[in-house]
Length: 274
Image 1 (cartoon, rainbow, N blue to C red):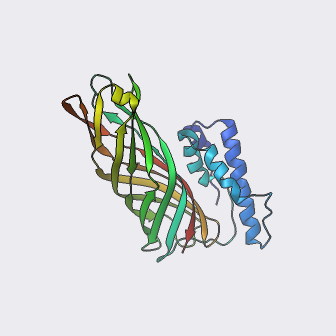
Image 2: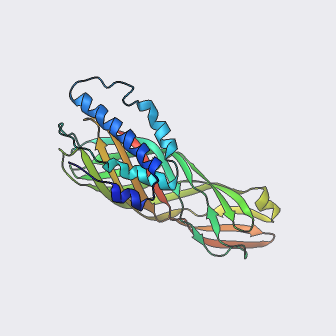
Image 3: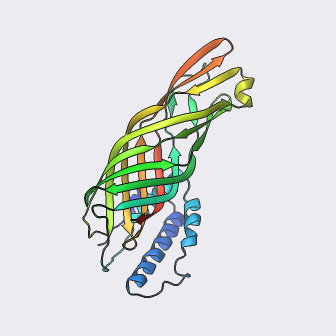
């Protein structure tokens, strides 16, 4: 089966060096897989698993990470036997997970809206295949740290959050498919903690920062590529509806600012099927 990504690279505005890097890396992985299917040892010079962190670092920004997610669909014709998810499988994936907020808020003391930085952490997800096509997934990660800024003052605070998400998924294809695109929908619960103003914020007279937790809907697109019957590579993007009330004091006065964070959550990972 052959897939073309020419139009996708245009959509994500990837330059020539990004496309070449993705093509070469993916072709090396494909060649290595084909060698293993023929019981030929894959030479480390063809593809080394230790290079995966280098690939992640190269793509840890919004533009090229989006390109890496679509790279799972690069041109490849594979005639070898396929392995895929089956009813009863438990899939564990681990990799880089980036939260990229699309924030908006009410005006803050005439200084503009809150601005929230991106952050990347170790992402973990656990999927149980209820059938060959339906999965239940829990998305988790190590705690995220975000800087909060105002246009007029710069960074004024730092906040931490955990956003566990539970999703019901539908996997396209069947148990013989090597490539398994999927969609998911579910609930996100975001816990904010350790919220505090920095010296810039306290110097402006701000204190007692707090953020309410959030419950909202989540939607997901992803794809698994089976290397063999146990190992896979995965890429996904998720939207989470996250809203919070930001409260703080200025002198003797208290303020509450409704803030929507609504991030896109990108993940590139390696998975193992139990």
